[in-house]
Image (cartoon, rainbow, N blue to C red):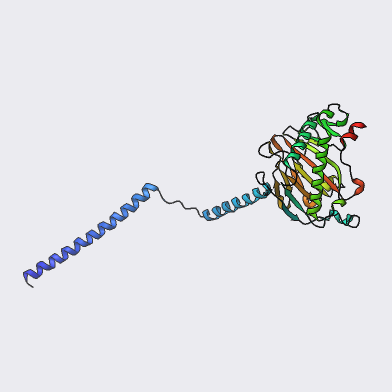
Length: 328
């Protein structure tokens, strides 16, 4: 073996040893880096039931949302205050409340039930006159609680925690005149024909019935059961002779008062909402298919006129007459 070959072999061996050292050095650097990271941030936390608990928390959150939503109910708007509606109708299935009366009042008992809203039935002039009658009449007395009524047919007017006859008050002659009563009759007749048209019955087969009245609602605390207007109820259960209920709103939700929205209460606590608008008329069948409530008034004053109709001519009431009332 020549001297040059020996030198070449020594160089090769030296090179291989150098490469091995470099590789070991890189491995050591990687290990050191990994150890430094572990030391810096600490060992990773392991929790054997972490996935189970996270899923349980997610399921609990979903169930809470479902429960809260069902507790609060859902609101569907039939009519908002800012809308101006020619007519909007929602049909609902009639309850069995009318079955016993079908043979007695075949042309009047509803074959189809529903809810109707219109802003084009009673004129603004007529609405202004009716509002004036409500304000002036109710200002003669009024309930101690948050709900006062004035029934021009019977004369019943809320006062304190009871009622008086408005026609016994001398000052009542100063706040009403014969033109007011004429406008009242015109509005009532328009509503009666609208009910007949929308529910497909002859207008001469439905009759005005009691109670038909003005109402004033505020946020004053209730003093008697008569002031608690917000409880869900069915008109036909409260008033046996009711078949069709209507409301003419005389003030504006969101302007004259807050709260006080009208709500139909349906299955699963779904609420169909009508926001009162001055001059707006709502009409609905009076059976348990139309369970409803009025939201508590939060501020301001809410005025409305309830006009009710029956199929029973024996339960009919006459229109109030200015001259007759004060000539008694």
